Every structure is written in structure tokens, then in C-alpha cells.
Length: 183
Image (tube, rainbow, N blue to C red; front, side, top):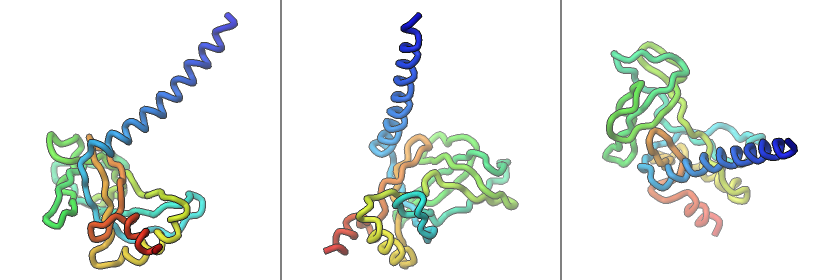
């Protein structure tokens, strides 16, 4: 009877580790095996000192058309089909309540619904970075977000999950651009 609390404690510890490792494994699986999707970004939100150092990432496409045969409620989970265009940037080509049989798709949540249009909440909105690079990255982001070419968010998508992998401008990673600016 004296060992029962230790057994329960051991099971609890193992369960906590298993949950954390499962999330890390899923994240890394998406980064390794996911399809690369590029989305053009819009202006970031102002700096928020409570969340630490990050760049606010907002894909430009925030509103999608709802097909005539689909009924969607606010806050519902839906699946977007993403198709790359000639310029290399992906666009939302369809919205559905179930995952499509083929193609690159992403599970998102709907926001406001107006007539046959819905705003979407992307599953990523922050790109965390090194504290030392953050001030220079913030300046870089502010200078280039309104550029005609704009900043591109590079995400990896696998089985409806997305992981923000990098940000780029003109095909160059923002980390490389920051290194050049610091020289």
C-alpha cells in the first residue's frame, strides 16, 4: 500500500513527458515531411512586451468565399485547399468541412461570417526569434512589409497541420538578410 502513491506519481510523470514529446514529434514531423507553402504577409501588429520577442505574421489572404453548398458557422473548423500560383505564392482555392482527398490542405477556424464570405484564423501568427536579433528583425520587417514584393511566410503543411518555417524577401531568408545588415 505504501508504493501506490509512488506508482501514481510515476505514471503522472511519464504521461506529462509523453504529452510533451508527442507535440514536439508532431511539430518536427510537419517541418521535415510537410509541403512547402508560401503566403504573402501584411503589416504586423504593434510590439507587445508581454509575449516576448517575435514578429507578428499575418497572411494577406484573410477572407475566403464559402461555396454555395456549404453551411459554415462562426468558430467552425474548416479545411482550406492551398494551390501554388505561377509566382510561387499559394492561394486558397477551396473551403470545405472535410479534408480533401488530395492536394495540400490546412485546417483553420472561421471568424466572422458575412453572406458567403468568412474570415479565417490562420494556425500561426508569431515567429519567435533570438533576443539579440529581435530589434534588427523588427526594423527589417517594418521596412519591407509595405514593399511591392512584400514579405513571404514559408510554412510547412502536412495532414492539415501547419508550422511556420521561415520568412523571406525576394527568395532570401530574413536571417541571411539580417546578417548582411549587421555587417
